[in-house]
Amino acid sequence: MKIALLGYGKMGKVIERIALERGHEVVLKKDEFNTFDGIENADVAIDFSAPSIAVENISTAINQGIPVISGTTGWLENYHKIERLCNEKNAAFLYGSNFSLGVNLFFELNDYLAKMMAKFKDYKVSMEEIHHTQKLDKPSGTAISLANAIINHTEKNNWAIENPKEDDVFIDVKRIDDVPGTHSVFYNSEVDLIEIKHIAHNREGFALGAVIAAEWIIGKKGVFSMKDVLDLHK
Ligand SMILES: NC(=O)C1=CN([C@@H]2O[C@H](COP(=O)(O)OP(=O)(O)OC[C@H]3O[C@@H](n4cnc5c(N)ncnc54)[C@H](O)[C@@H]3O)[C@@H](O)[C@H]2O)C=CC1
Ligand SMILES: O=C(O)C1=N[C@H](C(=O)O)C[C@H](O)C1
Image 1 (cartoon, rainbow, N blue to C red):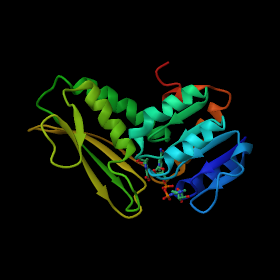
Image 2: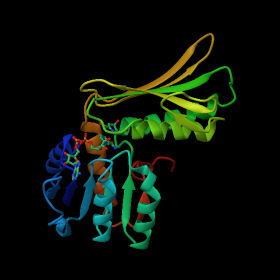
Image 3: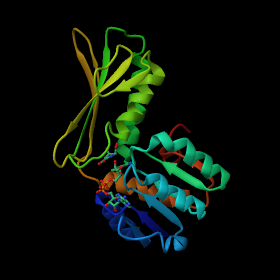
Image 4: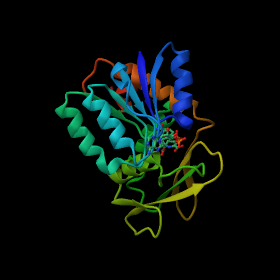
């Protein structure tokens, strides 16, 4: 398949290598120094760019009728706008806060644990996310997905990265050089601590997941998530 890479930074480069290894072709590497010229030749667009540019990248591809995979985080206040555009244009769009298989399994584990812990009020839930110092958004998109699942199943109503209120899930955000992404969920009581943790060793898992999602979305119409790609919940 012919791929337009929207964003050609740390992730765009790993995605390019994995896509070429899997026999695909890259027809556009869009960054801040060029235009969308050539996007019309793509079968699919993969957006790993920046919070400020993601909506423009995704809308441009959808308006051309090109299916889009987006892994960019930090733009979700505009998610419904993109969802509407996708439906209006009868196009295909898939956002994932994290494309790695490991994190998507971790999401399932987090969901199960949150459901189970909801009735054990002695345990206080909190989270931690650690990423490299170049990351633009906080908390991470993955941390927001994890927190939203906890909010769905417990009496928590929101998440907070500072001064948490009683009904907030506190997310402790840490930035340390070269950390690809570490997420932990804690349930702490007076007597013990339950912790679940995912550590990405590198960016390969994110990139492979994005290419697999791009292969999967060809020929489909609608708004999807990684649950659809991985056939979880079926
Ligand atoms: N969903 C997932 O599995 C993952 C998501 N991410 C997210 O993907 C995004 C990109 O991550 P990285 O590649 O590490 O970042 P990066 O900073 O290394 O690369 C971003 C690229 O976006 C493009 N870009 C930035 N500003 C632009 C502008 N104003 N106009 C046009 N192009 C622009 C440039 O090509 C830049 O190199 C981030 O939002 C990050 O949080 C990162 C890893 C995994
Ligand atoms: O910016 C990153 O690097 C990452 N971003 C995603 C996020 O915000 O959750 C996914 C991964 O943790 C790496």
